[in-house]
Image 1 (cartoon, rainbow, N blue to C red):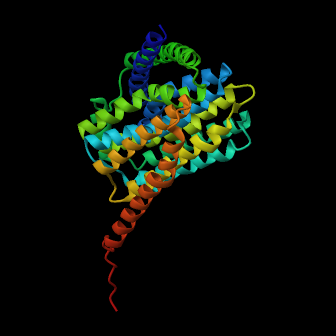
Image 2 (cartoon, rainbow, N blue to C red):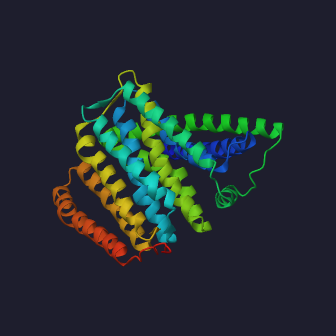
Length: 367
């Protein structure tokens, strides 16, 4: 029955997120919000809504490891699994705007989580600070939308299979109904999913942090999986990348922020999360920048590297949770050989790229 509840919860979460994304996006266009703002805010909110609902309910239920593990695990899953699998399908083009602003912001926010949680918990005040950061990011997106191009509008049409035209009043009311139904399904699905995940953890004797980093993180990231993979198959490569980066930013500012606000005592952060999982999230975020910047393309080799690392990360968590005798050896091999060699390879590729990249022509001046 626990497996049934888990699967039903995931299914309901996915349907609820889909209704929320569709309804909110069309309503936003109906009230005059640009497609770019919709993509950076409403769609990111919709695909991250399962993480938001699960983490807030976990915080309210006094299960901080699930709340935090869901955010950290989802961010790791989004980059390594989703981008890795999407790039394996087709090499992903990375927009310059993501490299200049969004990826550095994702890296900075990952470090911020480590700084704020170093004392062992995230307070309500810190949660408010994160949510205000989300408001600021949204405001920046609105300003940026004024420089929107026809290419962005074309991407929106390809993503939602419709022209961004204003619907009628009846259409707007219908979108409000879709949003309400979507939110209701998200809440119901999150409750079933959360109940099954917690009971499964207790039955197997696995910690809530491990369940949050694996099952819950992967399950609540299903909307991002569907969006990025479908976008990659359709050839909308920058949408596939932007969905992941935008969702990671929203997870930290919105999901973690609201979870800290919802809990009366804030969100407790275990020493394992501070010393292992959050640093891994930071490392994954840092790994994005040189790969993204090298030719503005995430190659199939990069995708295979990301995907392989996620499998290794999951295996390390499972071995540690089972207290398997191979766990220390596996961790040492990853820490001292695989990760350093990969880092050297990425830095070398970045160095070679910029060394061989032709310099821009200098303007000529007449004497």
